[in-house]
Length: 249
Image (cartoon, rainbow, N blue to C red; front, top):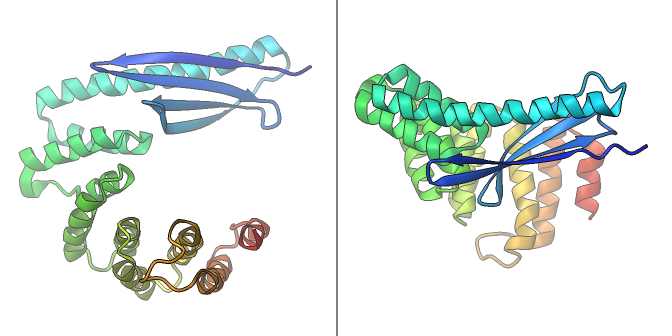
């Protein structure tokens, strides 16, 4: 018998309304809890359902996971109001990390910027703030923040990779390539840099097939294949079959 479990809740926080949606997968025997903000999914969690002996027990566990995430989000925003009033620097920074992990980039930016405002040089949140700007799709601010962070941490390849992606998303492909290359110069075994460039090259054949700063689509596909192969050699956990199927399509 097919088990169909779906739960929905709205979470009202200040002037915002978040939506929580939970479903159960019989195949995976897991519950998936997704958080939406204005129709956009900001976070998704998977929970293994341990006792699947009966449909009632499954529904009980799935409901518990749904309520767990709901409570977690409500508590997080409640804490933010308390922490901001206290101006306790370590708590503000920690809260920024929590918002960043859960996909609330606007709130993460607010916490990290507030921490820098009241803490000045005591605060070391350049990297986290850069990530929050990037994932929040404020690429101009991310570029500025990453450039500043790289001046402080020039040997941190993750920053170079993130700046490469930031430039790419602004269609600054020449600058992006320079930073992709710099990331692999710092760390020759940085599989994510090769994989990310390969993925973006393939995607660009759809989004920007005739861009003057990019090679022809067929040349980009060939370069992407070479970079995918490098990434696969460096990371045995990558799905080779999936990569090859994607390239063929």
